[in-house]
Length: 331
Figure 1 (cartoon, rainbow, N blue to C red):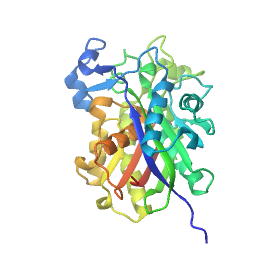
Figure 2: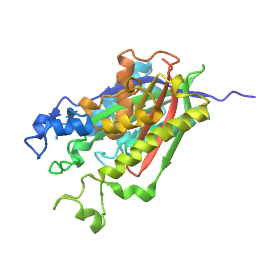
Figure 3: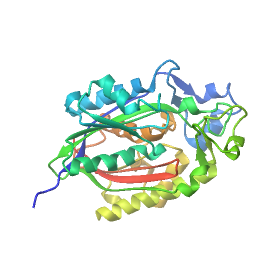
Figure 4: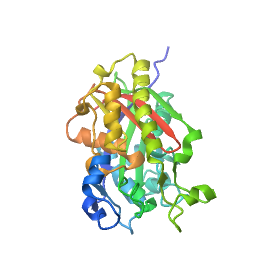
């Protein structure tokens, strides 16, 4: 019997824009305060992309760093999967723009949208191409410019979101490391609690926004909080059960960075200390699908991860969507 291939993360990279938007700066834009924002979200600042900069440049730079970290060349990339809800263009896709900018001429390329869960979806899809022998090296890049779909007159949402990009290289590994059990799911019946219209929006949806503001985020914060707090714990437990592990076997949980209270709630449900949950929310804000790969790259570069460490990657977001994966660290 031929042993199936296994997919592992062999390189990581991330980029945050240089420009910072602090809570104190927001106080001059909308009725809010640093104390109010920190108490309710845990966020002190977020990074904002320059108006004249395409998101694809941020995505390409994160991708180049991941490729270099993996010790391969752009020509070795056979597939590029990009996740975003804020692309520069609907076509060409972000993945095709990245392909051009990094010179990965041999790669197929496509975008996918699962909102904040996009990276977990892309990981689950991509690992199957590795496992079935179709590809040897895949680039997953998650990049978001949420500041471009934020209504800075809406104090309930404008304090939450930031911009950034994270990327990983997924390659064949021949040991016991790599991606283990994973789950992805959706609750489309609840999708109306978090929306960003594109070419069409119902009158009901438009009525929830400021006059003249169409393509901006609207969110029912309490409903999203309830969903996220529940699904983060459930997804983690389901992956652990599939893997035959307990939470004590896990070195870190690396979650989507939405709100510190959500992470604290999930920690209580999982009965783990907050030290086991990696966070960078304080200085990035919510960067949607980019948050998990950015955290993963940061944790790796800080030396927090060693070969064989078991991690849970977990996310939740618009759609509504959710997902989690067990990752045994390869590098």
